Amino acid sequence: MPTAAETATLPPSPLEGLGGLNGKLDAAAAAAGAGAGAAGTACCDEASAAAAAASVPPPQAAPASATSASVRAASARRPPWFASLPDPARHQDFFREALEVLVQQAVFQGTARDSKVLEWRSPEQMGALVDLQVRDAPVDHDQLIQYVKDIIKYSVKTGHPYFVNQLFSSVDPYGLVGQWLGDALNPSVYTYEVSPVFTLMEETVLREMRRIVGFADGRGDGIFCPGGSIANGYAISCARFHAAPHVKTKGLHGLPRMVLFTSEDAHYSIKKLASFLGLGSDNVFMVKCDSNGKMDSVHLEQLVLQAQEEGALPFMVSATAGTTVIGAFDPIPAIADICKKYNMWLHVDAAWGGGALMSRKYKHLLEGIERADSVTWNPHKLLTAPQQCSTFLTKHETVLSACHSASAQYLFQKDKFYDTQYDTGDKHIQCGRRADVLKFWFMWKAKGTLGLEQHIDTVFDNAEYFTQQIKKTEGFRLLMEPQCTNICFWYIPPSLRGQEDREDFNDLLHKVAPKIKERMMKTGSMMVTYQPLRGLPNFFRLVLQNSGLNHDDMDFIIQEIQNLGRDL
Ligand SMILES: Cc1ncc(COP(=O)(O)O)c(C=O)c1O
Image (cartoon, rainbow, N blue to C red):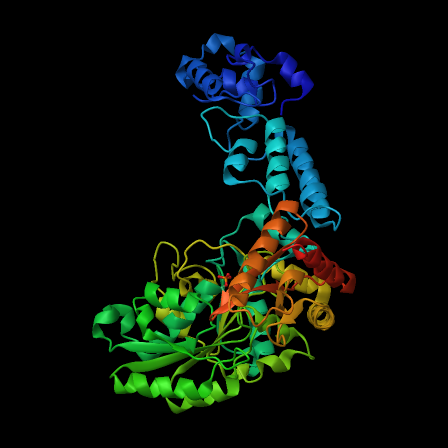
């Protein structure tokens, strides 16, 4: 923004008669005809915006005589108001104010137990409350700060202790600063020349994660992906390439019908990405789960034989370590034996449960994972790195490059002056790519592996406490003993207790969780998700990742469900 002294020397803005830019945008630039559409009011309705835009002279229309020499000199020194360049004089206060609002309102207030998780509004109400329409005319900094406040106010506070609704939550303080640092630097991690620090940081973190998985000396390869779904897609792509390398050049035409296997409780991304990759969702054979939600390895082998009998090529099994709903861990050793016997790629989708590898107490849940050919592991889930932070790890050192590289000469020139093996971007299917590693690295540095272990042990302890409490509390019934930090349970309101023999009991119970969820959201007190599964009526699924929660919070969640559902 111009200083008071600068503003005093500015010629009148052509917009001033409109209530204009009140000196907060650069009136000098506007007067110099910095842009058609350079009009703005604090809050534009359509008519005033149109009038403002219509009144702005085009650049060439600004009379040179109207611009004094001193203003021209000032304009030459400073970027125009629309430039994508931070200007201390114009943006310093703006940044400070925005950051202050973010820290106080989104971070501290947004995570305070005595504030709401959300301010529910219907889409119609929300559209009227937040001024979402973009217009020709700009708005000033005050208005932008007001938008920051509005957006915070009406957004769900996913870092709030009582947002226990999804497989991600929390505002990790170090993760957040890492995220902000990444945004300030805005790198693209494809070449060493553009991202020297992040290239090496990625390789370091991925090697350490492979070591924790149990790949010998952390050898192999890996990438940060935009989400666990895409990481699972990489697994399918690498496994297919491993079985039939000519797929890269010849496509699907030269291939037999290829079949992969996953459990009926696996994440839907396996089917979705199999379709996306041209394999077809019918060629994802769904293996039955046992009563604990784990893949039934006997059924897996039956399906492999069935695929062979149908003349198809079984090429991959995707086991899950921490299923999305139940949190079950598939029996990796038994599945690995079957993969070995039938020469199939073993992928372990540990997007959710992978975090348990950080804990000496809980890593046994993923026993056998070191036998996998590849692993999906999302630090943005159980380890609470900010979204998105997902990895695909493989013990095969060359498959990612061999399968995905395209050797674009404009970017991956081989005659660069440095060692171009550090230009790692060609093994990705993306070109430009965020440095998602940074926030996780920053957290890992701040807490150490020991801190990440304590984090995991704390969330498992809360899950155990919650489970014990609901076992003791009338009206609550567990779906099954939790294996991860997902706790699946029904709340049976007093009116339905003792009515289990009624024919319509399940139909009535099915309606309870959605009603309580609606009340949670309308009061803003918390968010816990629900779903049906394999014909079972809707049940709640509490998912814990936030290690800032304690036993009192577990008690609160139980009491709040009772309060909201007692009269149903
Ligand atoms: C087991 C599992 N795999 C993969 C995914 C997909 O991860 P993302 O949401 O990062 O795409 C999820 C998401 O919940 C999941 O639970």
